Length: 463
Image 1 (tube, rainbow, N blue to C red):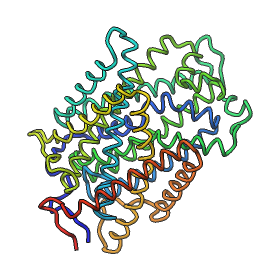
Image 2 (tube, rainbow, N blue to C red):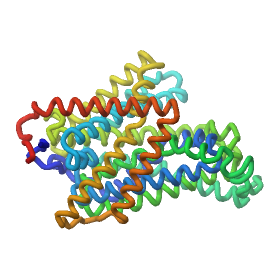
Image 3 (cartoon, rainbow, N blue to C red):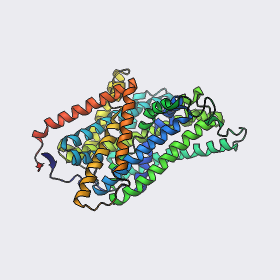
Image 4 (cartoon, rainbow, N blue to C red):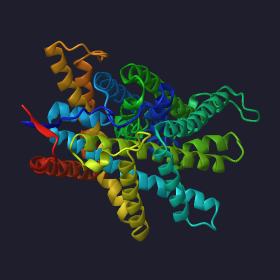
């Protein structure tokens, strides 16, 4: 017997206010972050030019996960997204564990992003300590989220637009460099892609090892499933949004990495330190250091803004389904779940404070625990879609959107995710992250089971 709330899991207290264009940019902004601008260098140093294969495989997984999410969102829009679908497919405990796992991850990441952005800006203005900048950033973005979803959508649109513009500018400059159109710089061509020990200098082992880094860079796209519930026509919007986001992300990611490995030798130490900066330095673009620092700060603040939004909506949905305190469902006249917003930010503040008190232990440890959360969420999404789609097909339910290639592509996604999990278990550092995340998920499942008997009034047993 599974307990479900008597209320719906749609946006009962939230006000639709996001446009399709804003949600599309949110999806792009969520995926284009500091991981691409800085972290991609490590993946290139491991796999060489063959890192393109790693990005294509990871991109393929994202395409399948987002297609499955889109099918479920179109049929049942919910601010709880994958948590709501896990509950409907696998029961109350699964929905609770997935939802709380996602919320905990975002709260920890909010602290990490605030700390990172504050540290960079403090380097520009040494007279003002980093903690002041962190306070300013958190207060400003909390205010943005409290002033209504329209206000949040506008801010996140422009945050994402800046990052997208930076990527487009980089692609244009890179193509000009390859073709010899940059004044004073000879054409680089694409010889570097196969030079320096070949396209795959470390073989498939390098491609697999890089995949572990690359797959997590695509995290953040799932926010569109949450945000779609606050648009005027979720079922129609989600289909166009997912298509737009996926095509653009693949072009930006694969295009950027191709430019990097074409313009510079993959084993250049500067590529590992900062691939975008290394390319622009080679092409004598002035002010590269400051420009890249500014873009990384914007990327961190954009992701932080989106994570406050995502965490608050997930907390709201958990409260609406009887899986979190009822206070999480309290909204302002503008439809903002202000208690959920403040709770998410307060825990972020606590994490930041602990990080300053114990800089070498607390935040790294917390990030280690939630490091593999994305794999759990994506896997639960795939399993939920297979279960719910089969139920819909058996009952003859008319669905607004049906994922192509079902069930074969859904099972292919699970196989690919299983492969990533297997690779994670081989790598010592990644294995610890995964085991800690699995341990946290198991703990959340146990807590959910223990709290079934004390579910608040309004939650009934489903026959």
